[in-house]
Image (cartoon, rainbow, N blue to C red):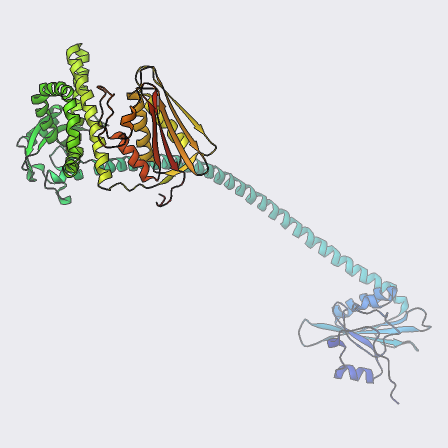
Length: 604
């Protein structure tokens, strides 16, 4: 009969414990044992090993599976078997508690690879003494262990020597590493120093860059200013360099000189002009030579008169003249005005006297002029465009003459200058009234409404009109109501208020008080202007808002009779009404009522 043995006591990995042919043969022979590698790690187990090995799972080290005292002997025997490549037999080993001693045979063998040695370890229960020459008896075990220990000590000494050599190499390597570390630290310090220098240079470069950028911005701004100046300059201007080559010109110069963009860089003498000015090139050379400005008058082919000013082009950094600037100013109207002023200065004085004498005749002729609407419209249009420029020139000339008279302390000239200025101012006011009336009658006023703060608006008007009062007159403004905002046409409303306050100033005494107040309710704005002046006769009040009408008690106070008519019509355009209450020698009160948000118009 074939005796069946129990399986191995150790849990060998499946791949190692598999029943291959060799294992089957060993088990068939009734042998118990294991197959290990050179380090006594169990690779295979066969037969019944439970009598010899500890029942420990997941432990494959044979020395741990054997009893401790046996483990030392087995490790020594395995070492000897591997060194001598011979079989070693351990006999009569006491496994403790079994009642029998155990023989262990350790046989080294190759698996195929030259250095891949394995050990076959067989366990048998001792029943007789072995006769094998490799047998190690129990008496020899101590000596065998001593030899194993001596061998281990030799290996330990060799290992110690190797460790000391390695330690020396490590120390040498440490010294090299320390030296290399010091070199790296030195290089790092140099790099850090170089980095600081680079950072300093970078900061300087950034500073220079900022300064350069600031300079570029300033140059760009200056260039923009220069270009905008040229674009907005309606007068003609030319820039030429020291060789009389055209450098730049303003858009206004094109109407005086036949210029194109391609003319920049050409000699000025080769460019044709519309102005008869033969000395232009000579004047430029003279200006560049002595640095003095030359001003001449020249006439164009169209009959206009120009003032031509030639001045040096000076470099700011050197102060040297590097070309010239030629400017053309149209003084045709000024020349005509000065000529007329020279001829009619005395006539104007006589006309002012005649105007006072003929005031009654003018008042009578106003009735006839009411029937000449078409002629009046043409006259007003012509007056607004053709008379304003000469009147402005007259006022300017009168102011200049007045300054000269003040310097010369000439009272007569000063007196007549003031008369000219006042007459010109009155004529300007008359023209403005006529222009407003003409615009109203032709329907060319289309008020656009916008929302604004009426309290600030009225306060500003009161402050401006205070400067036009006479003597000790005072304008007192007050507002009633919580609201401040209205939606009206501020230009029309301002004209109405200024007209009424101007009348209050004109027809009141030098020490009088002029009341001006505004009041806002949920739906309406009320404006009241009150004075304690000469008042308006009752019989004249029904005609008060008619054009060209003036009350009979105004005496020599100047006016056109158009102001109240304009106020009424402007108020009506904003869907409002104006009323008047007056008593002779007690004063007059005008009240304007307007909706806070009128309907029928688009808001601005």
